Image 1 (cartoon, rainbow, N blue to C red):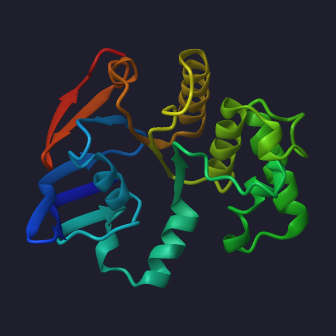
Image 2 (cartoon, rainbow, N blue to C red):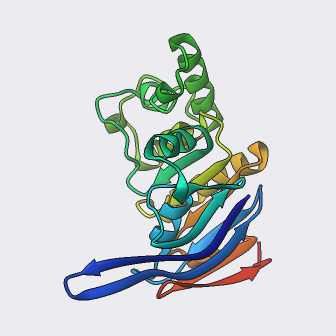
Length: 227
């Protein structure tokens, strides 16, 4: 479970102070599926970075299963991210010179998984997103939707507790967007993930069981949005 209490994040831009997050309180239960929506610059990605331990708050606490992420050393925080949190980004972030299978395997290297097991788990993860026949293809040989499936497989191959997705369908057409969301929602249900997604897409936001709207660093939570 996530507990955010009084979370603020301030940046300095020249003489100006930007309040990316301004006193955010939020609880995310295990197994929640939550969408974060709001205008550009409103704090959506900053909130996701806090949940993922990619940034630290100026003040307040971000706890995951009782551990305050902001209070961890950098090395321990890296371990938590490697073990518990999977990330999916708009730009896929695949290594162009590695095959689909090799890209997925990269998530297991920090965990010390041996080569044979890495290969087997990567193949299984790719099969779970419908790419069992694409193991040896490079990113440049795949469509955008297929590349995002590889990125999803990479995020989930380590069997994390949490999946954080930042505009995962932002570079895709409407048809491919729906396919990717079907994959994400299927895996969320099957694996019991806590799933938090940032999106500009109102059609996706309306389907979420919980919707967080963030504007000027402040949040509004809507429970039981139309799903």
